Length: 372
Ligand code: PEP
Ligand code: MN
Image (cartoon, rainbow, N blue to C red; front, side, top):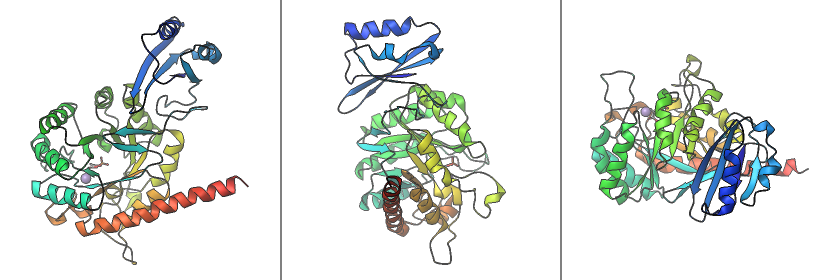
């Protein structure tokens, strides 16, 4: 059961204390409080877990501090959409709103290799009016002898450049909980010129201890990739680990499934699940066409498969696209074969704008037919 209090409820008031006292005395119920501090207001929610069947929602609703009560109708308690659930489908981070009604392109380097490449990338992103990018510092690699990313050594110049080019959010994968502190320290040292969205890669989707550590911190939002060999439900439960530890600012990313049935693509594209995740949860949904397709092949009409697939995700309602670019793909230390080139960034932006506008047209069409 989820209880939402009236905005800006005073936690020192007697009414609040009386309410908390009531919850704490409910038999066989564990109570967890969650607070979201937004720009305009502070929202307090209570999550009641256990034998909630015996609780009458009306009794809870009668407390003056309570705005709304609803029963949890599916297993993703925090991130799931439930009957009568009026919680928001967005969050704000560093001046950028991520939500089910928003759209952002995160074009950037799969892995930071040189300062010069990071600069070319961020300058291009910024010149084309974007304020988000991807920059891989910690790379999980299949082969232990492959380049593992420059880790914390590259963070000072990555963050400094992000500040220089007005980048607000960088998606950056972490593979160990110590990386959270490294990123935090590097941001502090640089004077917090930008923000970071911590990325959980597909190989770590079910690394539960990492999920718990990332979920316990609330400074950074999280982008969690779907596990490439597990069901959607298992991956959504992995996302719920983050939320159950306290961090509700989670974006869910589809990136293709590992099976030879997707050949010659690197993974079998699973973007038909975009509407499913939007329906089941409050999370904004991202698609990663680069790791899905894994090459720069194009159709006979000249459109790259990466762009086709990205557009398919956006037509289905994706709220974010994560795409690999590189100023010199042949020199990239990771995933060069799938990287788009800098002169393709404007093209991708225009192509995705068409797809996004078409999605919005499709929504209007659905409304027209639904009301008949
Ligand atoms: C990445 O985005 O750099 C990455 C490694 O992706 P994935 O975890 O989906 O393979
Ligand atoms: Mn990659």
